[in-house]
Amino acid sequence: MNIDNSIKAKILAEALPNIQHYSGKIIVVKYGGNAMINEELKEAVMHDLVLLTTVGIKVVLVHGGGPEINKTLDKMGIESKFEDGLRVTDKETVDVVKMVLAGKVNKDLVSQLGNLGGNAIGLSGMDGKMLRCTPLDSTHGFVGEISEVNMDIVEDILDKDFIPVISTIGFDEKGNTYNINADTVAAAVAGALKAQALISMTDTVGLCENKDDPETLIHKVYISDTPALIARGIISGGMIPKIDSMTMALREGCQKAFIIDGRVPHSILMELLTDEGMGTMFRI
Image (cartoon, rainbow, N blue to C red; front, top):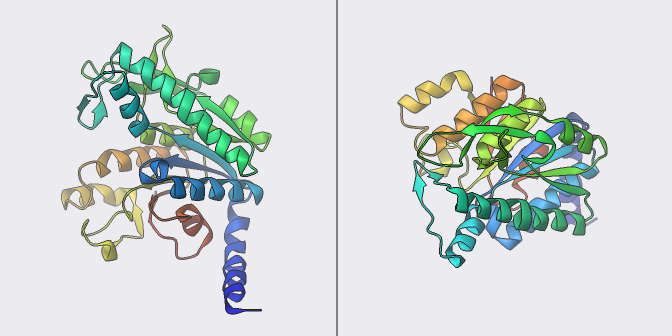
């Protein structure tokens, strides 16, 4: 056996206890950032998800699609506007969001998973009355705050060994469509499913003592410590709502949550199936 194969065999042997730990359990992956627009990274993510399902782990994929929405709006001559990091979504814009997320992006991901040997079904938060919403506020238009979560359809799909691929749009009782933040959806889904893990793919290595120095990565954080980390400025800006969402998921019953670097190929496997991991883990 050559050295390369020896290394591969060692990696697989070390992965076995982690595979056994997660087998039969649910993990929710929030998919976004560079991993969604770089074709090489996208293929690596889809490979990871198919591999995880092959070894008996139940995977739920939650995706946004901001760059694709921006591109489509631009082609249609509709200006993209943002307030506090969220897209201002009027009636015309929310129709585009629904078309792009539930139509193009969702079905592209389902197709790619299928081409790699996985079984996936595309859903939106409107399907099976999954994500009922109210308006977040008067500023953002049809941006939704989740008021009710129904996981019946997702649980049925998982029981049949399919990967639910969920686009981040919801509904209200008047038939309106809402655009929802992807971190918020992933957290709501992970909490409602009592998932073993929520994995948020980002364009950072994780939470660092010094955000400009990856060597200062913090490997484990208890959510009781997050107020102090915010006060020290270690958690700041766009990381605050992301960690707020993870805190919600943990308090609703998700066992642990991770922020990992989606710019690294196979980062999901490295986090879940190696002892060292690669990002920041959050626990109660």
